[in-house]
Amino acid sequence: MLFGDVIWGILIALVVAFLAAAIRVLREYERGVVFTLGRFTSVKGPGFFLLIPVVQQMVRVDLRTVVQDVPSQDVISRDNVSVKVNAVIYYRAVDPEKAVIQVEDFQAATSQLAQTTLRSVLGKHDLDEMLAERDKLNNDIQNILDTQTDAWGIKVANVEIKHVDIDESMVRAIAQQAEAERERRAKVINAEGEHQAAERLVQAAHTLAGAPRAMDLRYLSAVQNVASDKAQTFLFPLPMELLDALRKGAGGED
Image 1: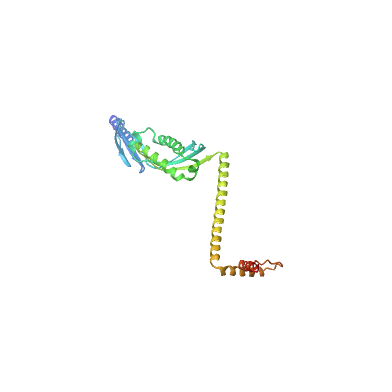
Image 2: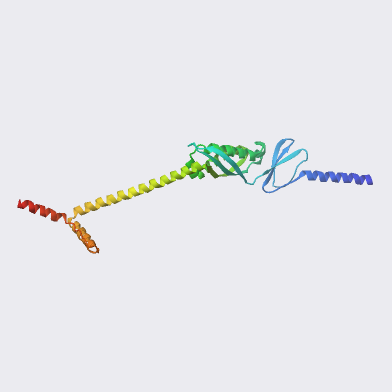
């Protein structure tokens, strides 16, 4: 009787050990890539399932979006300016089978690929483009990464350039350039204003030339403005018609 109890105890222990090794429970965001005797057989999850101990092995894959910093990279722009650029990438595994079989460590591989792509893409642009066209550069890097990681079952959702660090000497040069640009724009605006004013004066002169009585009105308006002044000395301009009449009279007497 005692021997039988020992046998039953051993059998129960074996069953419990087998179930403990066979039972797997995966969360909603997890998948299990199952290998049977070293060969890929299926992708399991989420939820409850059984594995055959020793015969089958499972590799967990997290399907949630991974947010990963790209370490600061030394980049030489197209206009030969040395800058340090770092970024952040958002990606996730969309095909667990490829993410396990096609690449040893998809997170490390994606990080290294992001670093080399960041240097390659930014090196083709000028410093001004790096500072002013970040959205375009982000899209370019994202498209390249997404294309190359597709074979690994990885989807790169977004890339954001965080910082573009420039030497202090270059910062001063950029500030001087910006100041010179502001002065140039101010001069252009001033010149355009003077040009428009000159055009208006020419138009007014043509208008007055076509209406002689209008000049008399302008003359009377000017006299009225001078008369309203409290100054003690007045200068009255003579109309050109009066001077012409005087010249004609003087010529007639001769």
